[in-house]
Length: 436
Image 1 (cartoon, rainbow, N blue to C red):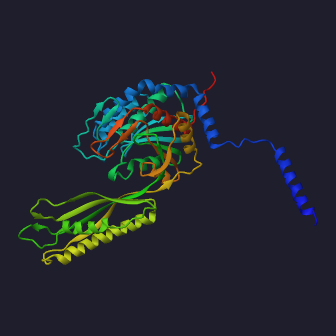
Image 2 (image 1 turned 90 degrees about the vertical axis):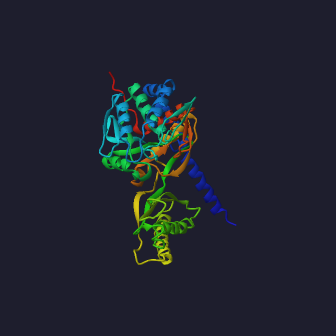
Image 3 (image 1 turned 30 degrees about the vertical axis):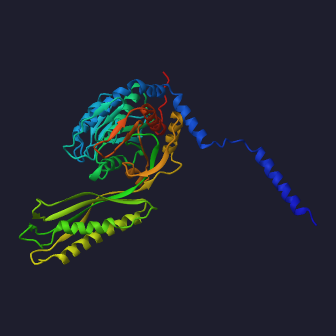
């Protein structure tokens, strides 16, 4: 038996080993090691350390601003009073501040490189309608009020970031826009963030959205959603004398029951919600119209299309069933339509994004671990356009979002604020001090 082939193979292996050993040693750093180096570079900067040190002695001030802003009503499309208060607070720090045509409050911290921009944003609006009691009740570190966490916490963190950076006389490499934006909730359709991205598109490198409490997650995947309104209208009449006439509310109920029985998959996760229903003028009148507002969300665009189609078909069927059961069809018929109120696009942050790396480095620095998740936030807009973006909580804890019993506890807030600042500085960079 010849020994040549195995022998040749052995020689080849030996040569490969020699070549590999002779090659210059290059560090194949782990992601953790790379993040540690990034954190170390920031921590070695005296101005960064000074900015981080600002938080601890000023937590009470941050809490007070959160309570103050939350107590200013900001229903969808009515954010102006709260925006004015935020503008004043930002201007006090020395930033150049303006309110744009959309209603966004924008404070600019000029960087050494004015051609590249980082946006740090917290939304101004709440889901609560005008007239809601937004008085803040405080007990120790706990505050309770509608909107106190979503997004009173984010707005307070935004102000804290500016104060910390300005107090340390810190100049970023990239220009940072600190923004309190409009239109995140309800039917706002992310109009504030849309305007920001449109205005800054050519220079925009990353967006950090501050939304709610906690540090346990980071939204890197934009959940696509649509908001729809179904309207059914008819002639209307008297409940006694016109009994048997087609009733828009009856038709809407029939259609709604059909729709809520629509099957949705567990994966890709898909949801729907009938959030509002309106119609009628009195209990003894056949209404002339009825309307519902529906929120649909899915990890799949195909499922969104399927649900929207299902809603239209169900409303049409509800109208048909009501017309067929009506005793008197001669005095009018029902009309229906389904309108798109808003659409939030999907998107996803790349796993090797510098922004995600900066966030992970910040997590390491404060001893935090956070999971990646999918959600519908202001980050949807930049992510859908291929711009790096994340949405993160700002520390502390909270619960009851979008309810009258919403609460926020500031215990642990300092670590969350440091995490935000280190993330922002990780992507903005720090301008080198010129030698004197």
